[in-house]
Length: 114
Length: 114
Image (tube, rainbow over all chains, first blue to last red; front, side, top):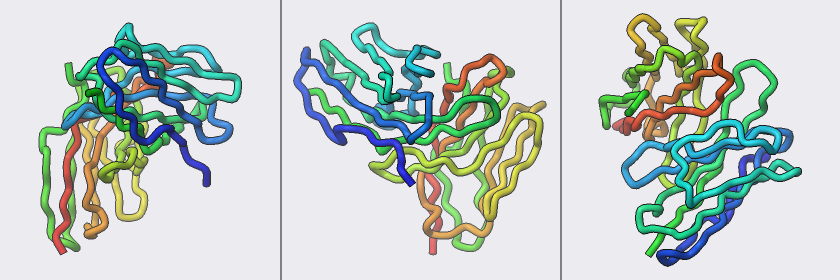
């Protein structure tokens, strides 16, 4: 079965550069979530989208922005990168519409800021 | 402020014995709880979930127990197998508020000794 696809898997950027992470949800899933997991930390919720509209916002810095497109894929745009942005970024998707549906995670993008 | 807590960073269990992973939460609005399993360099994989209307959910070797009055849940794995060795994250969401984003605990590293 198709899973959540994230690209790239690894990314190295310099300070003050920009980065764009992409997430392709499971087919027919309409909700996308972004999480950031720093070294030795638990995943922290950044932002989520439902039907191309932002649905929840967590601890996402103002330097970051995200959107969900008509094909439901999502992109996380990160500008003015800082060393502290180095982390694993996970995308998850789920199908809304009532009931208890689980979020399925991608394999993550490891961002290293040098 | 950590709303979901896993106070044991690690646990070692002999193969064939029971593994019990614990999780506490502080937000009384949480009504849906999940356990994820994570291998290195991979995204969290959904394991089992429980709604707040239940106090137990069982799926094969995995059983999750929920004690709402104590704001505590636990994951039982029996019998434990070496392939169960991974980091286990407890997660919660407050779906009654319309939000589906997950709040994660800090994880417990389970090692099953052959």
